Amino acid sequence: MKHLPVVLVLLLFACYPDSLPPVLPTSPLPPSPPPPPPSPGPSVSVVSGDLQTGTYGQFLAESLVVRVTNAAGEGASGVPVWWRTQSGWGEFQPQTWYTYTGVGGLASVRFRPMWPSPATVTASVVGYEQVATFIVSASGPPVVLMQLVPFFDCGDFGGSFFRGPSDSIPLGATVEWDLWCGGQLRSISVPPGGTPFDSGLIWNQHFIAPLDVPGDWIVQDLFDGTKVTLRVRP
Picture (cartoon, rainbow, N blue to C red):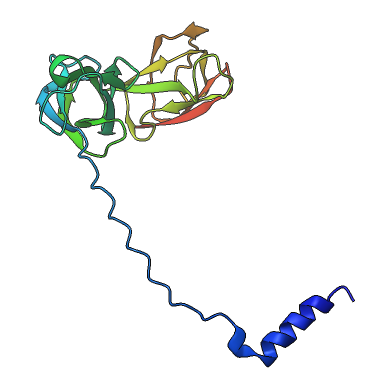
């Protein structure tokens, strides 16, 4: 009995279809306006420092310098610039891998080329794809840079990782270990005839160890257990 009113209404519509209200045509919605074109991003270009030749393990004579401009072609200050090695290896100063533009939109970084050479260095504005590219070379006795880098900040217990070329290192190369935070590096496996090493506990320092025989060298950071294998070729 609760559904009787609804049933009666349906019967009335079935018997008298003309009593239904007419269906009016609907007009199409107006098209949405097109999105505004994206504003042009900043542009980054090389100013100086490209095509330099230096010595392994030593900073280049000139800094790598770029200029960042806005859409009007004016130098933009206070813009973060990200520096990276796309090939080869080396060390930036400062080590944060980014700097900020100053007056006139200029940003610079010092670079220390390591084995292998040449190195391709790029600079880009954080968040944009366009890059400025430097190519620098080095010669002399090979110096290999291995960095022990934390996954997060120093003091966090998220562990760390080794960053650097670990395969086909030339025999007699000097390996320079760069500890961004603290640690103790020890050669836990050495090829026959090799000289084992132990850095002792150090903090934010470089430690130098020669690899004097070919083969696989396994090095461990005793602070958090991170390991890396360096393969030295004759």
